Image 1 (cartoon, rainbow, N blue to C red):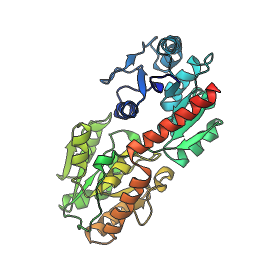
Image 2: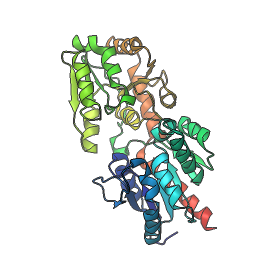
Image 3: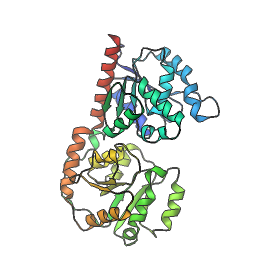
Image 4: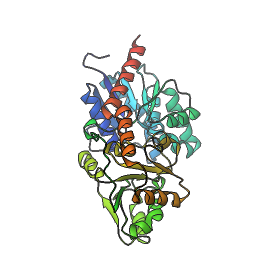
Length: 358
């Protein structure tokens, strides 16, 4: 290990806020981190060149460039994020290297990408089996990964909320009318946002509920057109916001809602729980690890009436909101403080480096 501290080569999407936040915290905790990316994000990073007209082969063709970067940067550890993309690239690049690899899973790289084709599944398997250790944000995600390829080591570490933003204490403040619900999932098919509008349209039109969605995503125009046919008003939209501003904005709502069809442990939900919002989410495996009857609500994604009934109960004052807030704050404080999550990750990195140097 270098005298200057742990040197980490992060291979990830430089456009992603998760990458930027992750790398900044690595550096704050004493690591020297360099991000290499095929995407051209605003964060400081080494820009890998895209070669060829087909996006799916960019990762394989970037392997030679990554090998050169490894020789010049001399990292103690390689840390790819997203198995079927940068995990595959790292597997191709480090075949002649003795540098340990810690692979981070992001959810869709295991739950969605491997099912696109045999090629995607083979890429994902190679990434998983080439990594010295794999980090996922839920037991469910890691169990699914183990069905694709053999994992040498596995660790469950979530993407938590920064300590400064966690609500200091619970309270028994009643929910408001209209009930302010935020659905912070971008408009893509997997996030199923129109389900929410269909389920709650009459409550929105009756002035009982206000729904807030992001104003971005590949299907935002399609969503707005469909929603306009269901509700006259009562939908709010927000643009992309800096981290601090977004969390302050989210904290002004009463309920976090997600109808996502696929998820591991959604970071947006853990953030909302730490801010004191009541979570309601579609009943899928990754979410079940967090939401129980004492912490929030699960609903059947095939039954819009279940979601509507949950919201009606909240409007009637049913459900122990104070207990839910208290339970969630304790859970976030114990398992989902971002600084602690990154500290745990760095400890794993140091173990891997020490094992390889023996």
